[in-house]
Length: 392
Image 1 (cartoon, rainbow, N blue to C red):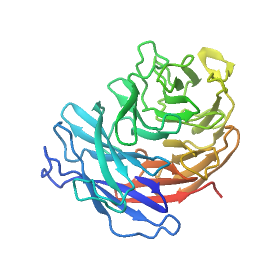
Image 2: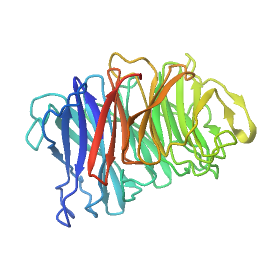
Image 3: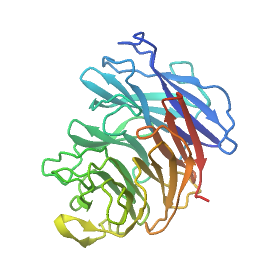
């Protein structure tokens, strides 16, 4: 899993102890390797950054340890989400890293300019499945919120979605659990949701509940209160396996899996919809459609992607105020597209990793106008990371 720092590119990886040696212990380690972001040259071998603490829970599987997502604050702090299989299912943790070169890490101080400051338990009832990514139904995600100056982690536990906010030092700073959905009981569909930010609003993308096979969006204010009503952006998508959202100053860019396809794209497609936000904190109104679906402006990519993630280009300096989209296709190639701030125009998708690990193994993070896109390939036990700006 990749991330960016100042003039550096990182790969974070999880080390599972062989055999049963780690059962019930804490010798699960997160490693980091640093690279030059322009040339890709390694700055040295992969090194152990910290031992992942289960924080009082009991580890039950030695193959159930995965890093899943990372985000960077404008000041350079990094959060890494990781997952451990524990009694009762799974648990999600957040490790807070400082870019300072000084000590503070119980494992011996700084590694490649990063120091572990704190680990917190985000959720102890996370669905678990073996394979790349670890958690069932996709992977949890984390972003940086400029409006609230917090990291926002999102995902699913039991039959509900949640989001949790944390200050850069790891202190709890707000939450929504469960996130309100289109279903009256807030039950959810198949895929894990993601969060994006537009001004003082948070958009939560998810697979609709209530028996629908569609793409839904819930909008919250920065105090985690529901704004308007959950929006159904598309229906009849089949087993909608993923959906993602990221914000710009003008609204939310929502990207989703069109698995069932259409007459125009019978093998499936990637759909995009743009939900505008007004300066008074309201939400732009789309065109009312059938079965409660609201139509917003957008576009499609002709081939179906099996997984996708999106992130805003607004962390630090140098960004172009749009949204980066990373997509995984059958066979493992990862493509990158860039969507303009108004959600109408785009560049790409361009192939950035010709052969990757497939669904559940890809991540994207933004910092200072560039994106770190990574993919882990289990068959070769290797990870790749690239830095890109707007292509070409």
